[in-house]
Amino acid sequence: MATIKQKIAIDKIVEKRGNVAAAMREAKYDETTIKNPSNLTQSKAYKKALPSIIARLETERDRALGLLGKKAEKAKYRDLVDATDKLTKNIQLLSGGETERSKVVFMPIELMNKHGINLGTETDS
Image (cartoon, rainbow, N blue to C red; front, side, top):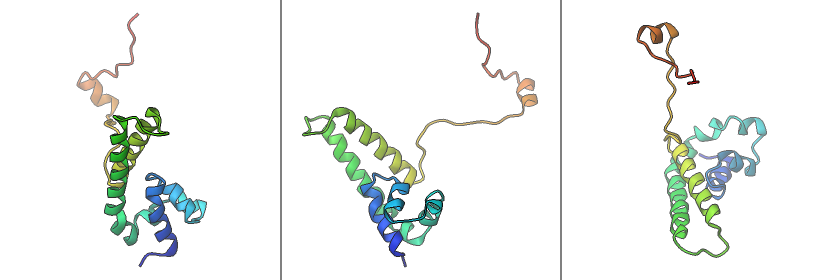
């Protein structure tokens, strides 16, 4: 069963556009707990609510995307693009997806030298 703080934080996640830390602050979690959000994000209540949270964030993102092609009252194009970007990244984070298409590969220098792999740090003069 969800605690009162968990219920409040879960309800606030969509309002805070997927920002778990801000939602936890609204629920009056201690700052030390906010820095370790797994106390909330690994709870049964959160995992149960996650599909609904993601669906609601996707609805918000779709609404912002829909307004991009129209003249929106009081909404600047820049703000709509920003909202769409943040909502998409938060949806990806909450659903376990990547927010970037970058990869880091660690390889011993000896192995790189053996296979002729250059770091690409030399500049042409």
